[in-house]
Image (cartoon, rainbow, N blue to C red; front, side):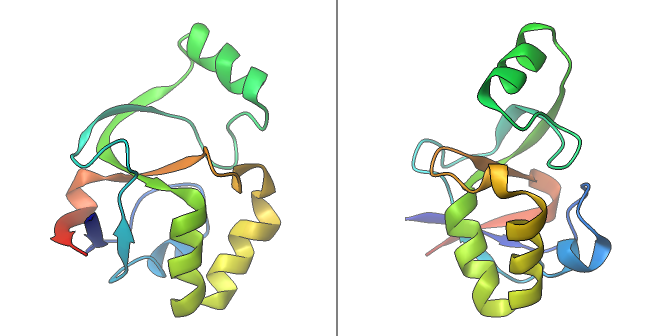
Length: 117
């Protein structure tokens, strides 16, 4: 199984202490992708909360791109829970619309290193 280790605080809309909690964690990559690639991204807080909102943003080109790795949100939160329960709780309370099996976090390639899990 391919995985990444977070080696730098990732950018984003989560509070700094929540983003810092990712550093050092090894996260399994999404089964669909095992390499970094250019991915359309939307904000975890400011982005759309529904499938149709996401689709509208994509169809109207209201998103940015990032060279990064895809990680299943639920798998990432599970790993984070063991290291920092308070950071995991922030994600559950602040972004419940992300807590679905088809949702992905994108971690920038320059904040990660690939490892074998």
